[in-house]
Image (cartoon, rainbow, N blue to C red; front, side):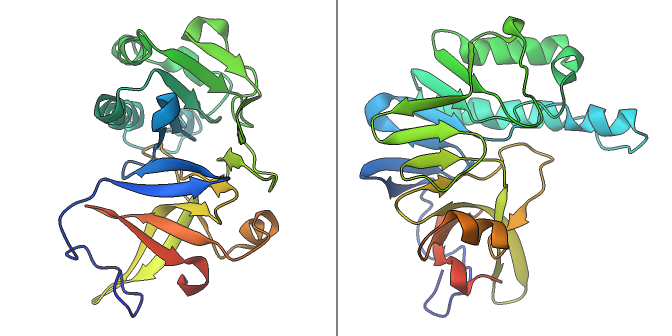
Length: 236
């Protein structure tokens, strides 16, 4: 990002993570859309929406049936990069209540491999409020560690890290406009980007974000090579 607010990808060498402080805790925002808490060896992802493609296909809306493979592949890369002891999936991990039944055998095996030797916590979301016990890991409505609370739907509470809203930022480049997923944060709370391959997004200029953040906040925008930090007020 240059001084004029333009989104540039050739500023410097690639930097796949950026430090973000929430409620006094330093976290690493990963270019994949994951969040890593090094001191806790904890990786957080939100809104995987696995099997969204098959859900749409059942309603006659045909999408390429590769979203689960793509999402799990990106998650595997983030897990390999940080090697966490704990993984928290912040809700809406599955696109609907029966999506877990539609997982292919290879996708189930890939998920099991990611869970191996790790504590895995599924936070229930509005799309998947009743997660089954045969997915591996444990199910919770929220998780509190120190000053941080992980939950699906944001309330605006201090120390909260949530998902649900799929934040995205519209930013200017030298040649065109781009819409990219982003972390939204004011240093006291955060809304994470959706991680799923087929997930859409909600503009951080939407009133839903103004209700969560009590003060000016920023977008940590996911670029191709690095994260870019820009004031939400300068996004479009």
